[in-house]
Image (cartoon, rainbow, N blue to C red):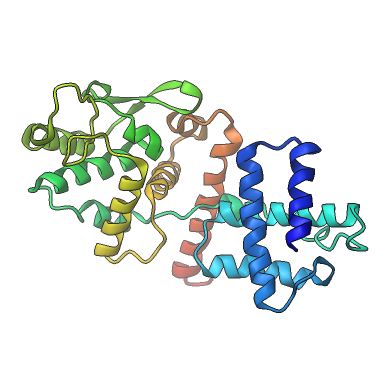
Length: 292
């Protein structure tokens, strides 16, 4: 399959006009698919079947891939299969009847309110790092920020009621912040932030060396506390953003309000959370209704 992948790369770069990042993502997905096929003894594209594709997506799910990553892999495979048919490498497009998932690609992993409480109680707020970590997690959940937005926060971006956020496309928005999150930030700033102060460092959340925290550090931190409090779901900073939106919707917030707070340019991006709420509704009915 190596030769066809090289030809496919030229095809999507020259004829499809895809961005470099998309091309690289497609090739990574297809390389993983090729390795999976070779583990099954399949070495030529003409031998690929629908069952191989579905088994590969199932394999990704078992490896706890994010639904967005699984969806992207399937899209890459579908484009690749169209290319194989176009180039007469295969006689048919074997992926044509495999429906691109709509519902499961949109439904993100969400923590229950009890799991969020456990995660928030993971850090020891009486230590410098613990105080910082608790404040950070509180802000993520209280305001639904992207991790990149969180890392870019400066000291003056948080006031008594709101967080000022620089979102995608350099679009600024103002998001409410809850009392508990403010208390955690105040505790961190009052008792421990000065320990890592550098004269020109304006970042709100900094490392113990006084440098602005990056996304990888925050991701590792969230993973650490999720493991510490024995949350078995796949948890990342984005999980708290999903949980923030879903819990707001569950408690009656309007979708347009949530869209504004999340900084979504399209309501379609926010609409995924209605699917999450419906799923929770069905799960609650199944679990608790006496005549289910």
